[in-house]
Image (cartoon, rainbow, N blue to C red; front, side, top):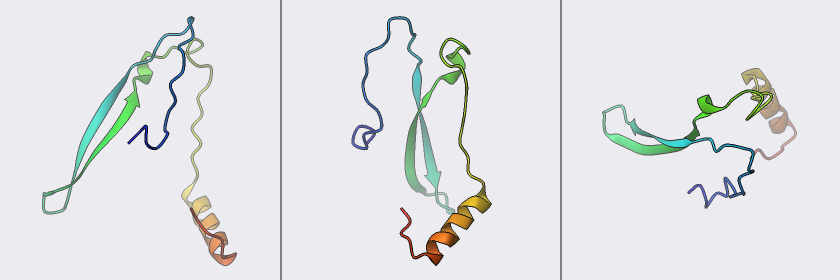
Length: 84
C-alpha cells in the first residue's frame, strides 16, 4: 500500500549521514461489541536516535486549529467550492 500510494522514494544514502531506523506499529480496531473492525499498520521512524545539529537543525509541525478548519469549510460551502 505504501508504494502504491507513492508515499516515498528510494534515494542514495549520503556518505556523511547515518540511517535512522524504522519499525512497524500494528493495531486492531474493535467494534463496540468487541469484534474486530479493522487491522491498521503504520511505519514510524525511531526519531529518538536523531541528534540535533547532526540529523536536523529545527523541528516544525504545522497544526491547524479546529475553528480555522470550521471557518474554511463554512467559506467553501458559502462559495460552493468542492472540498477534497
